[in-house]
Amino acid sequence: MATTKTKGTNSKIKELKGVEDARPVSISKEQLEKVQELVNSINRAQMEIGSNEVKKHGLMHQIGGVQEELNAVQAQLKEQYGTVDININDGMINYDVKADS
Image (cartoon, rainbow, N blue to C red; front, top):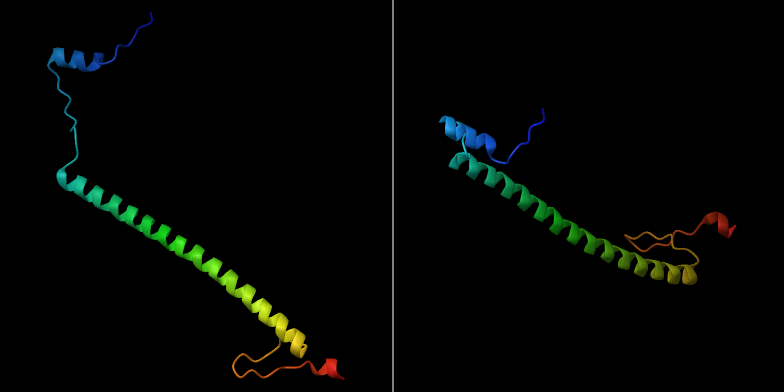
């Protein structure tokens, strides 16, 4: 024999029998505050990560622009001196000795 279940039937039966549900309906205030504190801490960390990713993205674009400028200067050096092999501390050109022979 099939039975149909009506919403709220179990609670109504318990009510009529005088049986109360002994389960708590909410957590303690201290537990709630601790959970809220932890969730807020995670949210702050995620916001900080997002902020750092935005900064990282901007810096990556900046590096790309500087690299393009360096490539242009290297092209000028190559045209003028035949090489881009220089000591960046003192500006001395490191010519390839084999190429001159």
